[in-house]
Image 1 (cartoon, rainbow, N blue to C red):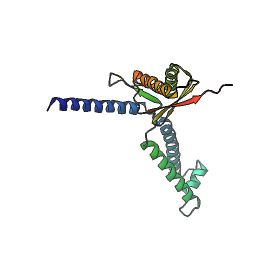
Image 2 (cartoon, rainbow, N blue to C red):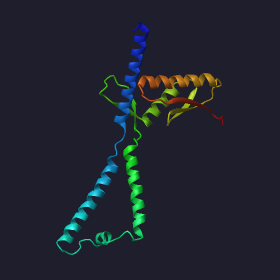
Image 3 (cartoon, rainbow, N blue to C red):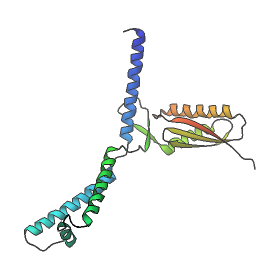
Image 4 (tube, rainbow, N blue to C red):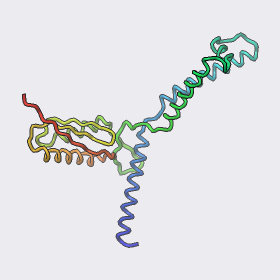
Amino acid sequence: MSVVQEIFAGASAKGDSRRAVRRNAIRALRPGRTPVGIVVAAVLSVGAWALAVEIIATIFGSPVLWPPLHRLLSTTFADPAVPGTAAMMIVCGAGLVALAVLPGRPRLVPLECEDPLLVMGLTRAGLSRTLAVAAQTVEGVQRARVRMLRGQIEVVVVTEAKGAGELLREVGAAVGDQLSGLGVQCRHEVVVRLRRRRRG
């Protein structure tokens, strides 16, 4: 292997390692499905216990403990409520499967760490405020507002300056430097928009 091949192989391995670290950080910061899981588990547990009590009461010939459950067990496929209930259960089941399969949106933006076992994140609101402060450090910017969109960081600056092109480049550089300094692991494109301040 030549020196050039070794350099490219090392760069490729480093890139793969950074991608793996970023993927692990995003996976760790994704919200869990705990609330949905608790609700489903509670409903299934209550239903199973009620059904078990009803079956045991029926076996021993005792009076029915819960009349609505007795009516539910005595329904047949000819009952008009059965198709609607079945459709509702299919929709609920498909929704639960989708919740289990589709990943949740991370509440935090992952930051780079030297330790691969350590995961840190910054809230989207906190990152937006930090980037807005960085944009306001550019001379000529009076106000700045940052929005985190899907795949894009939109920076809107309010100014009275005339050199729009140079100002936009400086704001983009300031925001980019802030992102690099924080070690933000996101593939967002920085878009800077200019808004002229109206003179009253």
